[in-house]
Length: 471
Image (cartoon, rainbow, N blue to C red):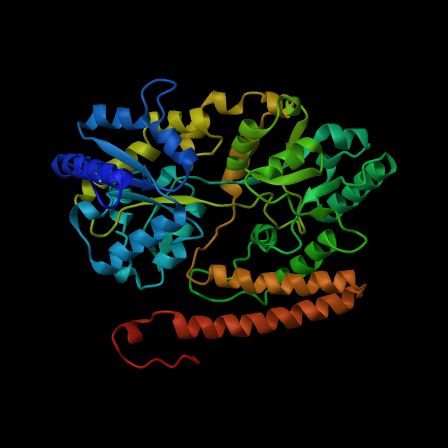
C-alpha cells in the first residue's frame, strides 16, 4: 500500500485518528462542588499543599462534605475572564464560587454604581457572622464602594524597613535610631561615604526607584493621603503630596542620592540585598517570605527590621503595600456556600494555621495575633522578633481607597516625579523645585478631575439622562 504524501504523514494521520477516538470517548472531569480562583502562588500553596499534613482544602472537604478546587490563574487572565463573565451575565458552572482579587485590580470592578458591581455585597454575611469586629477597619476600606462592602481582606500588609545590619554596623551607622526621613537620609549618606572609601562604590543605601511612583505612593499614604479618595475626589494638590515628591526626589537623584532601583526581573531584589548592592529596602510582610526562600544561607542573622521613619509626627509609622480580597461573584450558584468557603479560608483555626505555615503574611483577624509562635525570635533577623513588630504595626496601617482612577493618578504622579528628578540633577534650588512640583501637581489634578468627571458613572448617566462632565 502506498500513500502519496509519504509514510511519515500517513503515520501522523493514523496517530491523530487514534487519539481523536480516545479524546471523543473520554468523559470530562467532574466539576468540584466549589471552585475558587486565586492569582498568587503563595496563596494557592497555603490552601493546597499537603507537605505538613492535610491541606486547608482537605480540611474543608472533611468538615463540609464538599469538594473544593483552587485554580491558580494569572492575575491579568483572571481579571479578563471574570469581567467578561460578569458583563455577559454568565451563571452556573462558568462562574467561580469564590474569587481572589488583587488591590490594584479591584478598581476595574468598581467602575459601576454599587448595584451594578459584578460582586455580591457582603455586609449582611459579615454582620450575621459576628466577625466584623475581628477585622481591622482600615483593611475593609479598599474593598468598599459607596459604603457597600464587596470583599473580605485576606491580609494587612504593614510595611517596615529591612536592612543589612552588619553592613551599617561596619560603617558605624545606627539606622534604627533614625526616627525621621531627614535623619535617615543623613545616616544613609554616611553609610555610602564609608563604603566608597573602602572599595565599594557600588553600594547604595536604599531601594528607591527614581522613575516609578509605587515607592513614593507608599510614603504619601504613610502621610494619610490617598491621591483619589473613596468619593472620587482628587487630592493631588494636597501640600503633603508636593512636599513628599520634592523630598523623595532628593533621595533618588543629585548629590544627596541614597536610593536606586533594584535589579530588574523576578526576585533579583533579594540578590541585591544579599550582595549588599542595596543596604535597605521597604518590606511588606509578604516580602519577608521571599527573602527566606530566595536569600542565601549566609544572610542568616545579618538583617534587622525597623518601622518607617516619618516626615512629620502625625505620619503613620508604617504604610501598606499590596492586598487581596476574597469575594463572591453576584451570579455565583450558592452564595451561602461561597461564604462558608471564605469563612474557612480566613477565619477558621485551620486557615490561620495554614497561613502561618507557608507565609509571613499577617492575618487581618485580630485573634490570630495571639499565637505565641508569631512573636518568637527570628534567626534570619538575628533573633529580632519581627513578627511582633508587624503585629504592633498592623492596627496602624493607613486606609487605602482602591478606586477606578487610582492607577491613573499614579501614572500622573510618575510624570511629576520624573520632572522633579530632572530638576534635582540640573541643580535647581529647593524653592524652584517646590514651585515646579506645585505647578505640575496642579496640572495633573485638573486633568485627573476631567477624567473622573467624564468617566465616572453617576445615577443620572446610568439612567440615560445627560450629565454635564464639567461639573
